[in-house]
Amino acid sequence: MSLVLASTSPFRAMILANAGLEFETEAADIDERSVEAPLIAADATAEDIAVVLAEAKALDVSLRRPGDLIIGGDQTLSLEDELLHKPADMDQARRQLLRLSGKTHQLSAALVIAQNGAAIWRHVSVAHMTFRDLSPAFVGRYLAQVGDNALRSVGCYQYEGPGIQLFERVDGDYFTIVGLPILPLLSELRALGAADV
Image (cartoon, rainbow, N blue to C red; front, side, top):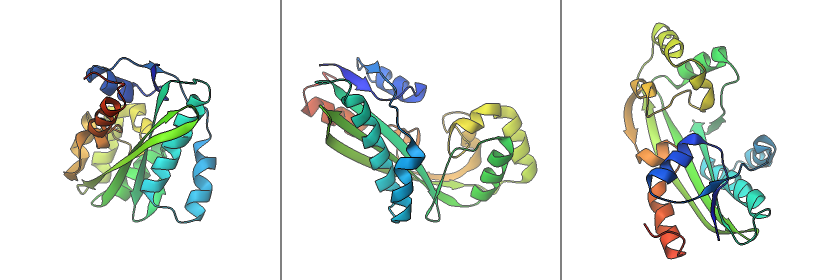
């Protein structure tokens, strides 16, 4: 039985590796927007959408890897009950950062473990992130500094890097913020006999 991360995210892989886990990676092949569309239409919460997306990823890889434990993860960002997505370009990133300026948004990080095509564990953690008031000039300098990295996350920031400059207050676990709540995952893997850490 192997442990498999259903993602090619370098951040998630780094967290697992730093925790001392031995695992493989295999990307899930799902269309996230088509999975979430009916959930949004049904007014599902950001937490529920994160869990459903994480489960879809875990199940997709699980069907190809019988017997293995598959970890699927996803993270959503919601602002005033609206789900935001990764920006398509730098202009959209600029507009999104200015929209988040001075406001509190919610990050929901979900994990699902699947085995043999069935979800056997689900978890979601939430962090509340408050941006400081950002001037258009600062946003321009910030985007020039981080470049295309702003397009790799829904909030246009990597919290573990220069993105920390955007915040006034943060309520939540660091690992939730970076997209993989490791402590509950480690606890469940130990319970399953899949981790000796």
